Image (cartoon, rainbow, N blue to C red; front, top):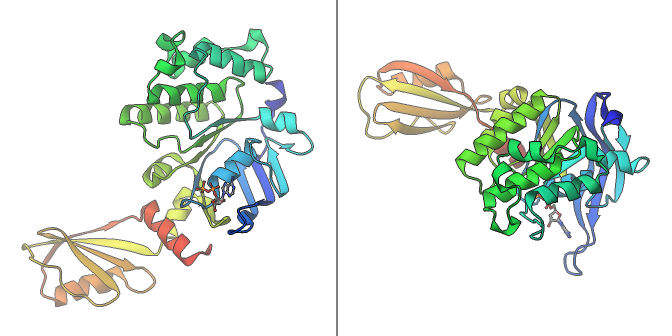
Length: 319
Ligand code: ADP
């Protein structure tokens, strides 16, 4: 749409965002989001990670206009959600987690209805094009109730795209999705991103966030505990693993002290996991040699997001 032609610095700008659910009489009010500040750079693929109950869905549903915030401000593609709700809503497309689809429409009709809801002029509609892009051209006129789970997910993605939003949000897009569909999804997301769409995704597949996202925010208990470019986040992790290839097979790992966890990855491959701030690679190599091991090769392993995530959420603080 014309009004989205200009690219702002941030696709999403959230300040002091609070969401308090009434909760039950027993639980009392639930603070799902505690005064969150978050920027999503325009043009990025942005990952939103966090354990169950962290507030991810609440955050996304507020962006989508499906949940009312308690206080704070939400800007979408430069449009304030309170001052300019129509444009803010039109700037975002959300692929929900649940596979709720109206069984009375065919996929093509579903897209046309959605286009109508967003007031997309007939001349600008691309329903068939979108359906074929997500691999549903053959099912365009099928009964929606006959679609498989994977096809329904594709249809939800197609629906989120009918109004050509500059920001696309995918809520747990690959939960329960087979490998082929996952690959198709990621390829298409990358393609949309290359063409200028800002993508926000929530996921529990940490490796995928690592592979897909330029920047990652981690939510925990309604707070942002980290928000950094992916390589910086990975670099911040304290845990490291050193792999020592041994000249001889070893039955059990040696005891190298309390600062290191030693495991045999293979009979001749010793993995030493340690905290960078408390031990060093040269000292560990020396300790292994002192324990009588002959080392033929040394490699280190980069931290993965799982480790970053654990260390950040366990300490509960941004560094
Ligand atoms: P996530 O998506 O990260 O799992 P949610 O946003 O779903 O987290 O939930 C955040 C917190 O808000 C949780 O404590 C959850 O129980 C609570 N919550 C979510 N939706 C509601 C609701 N409709 N009513 C009451 N509490 C809710």
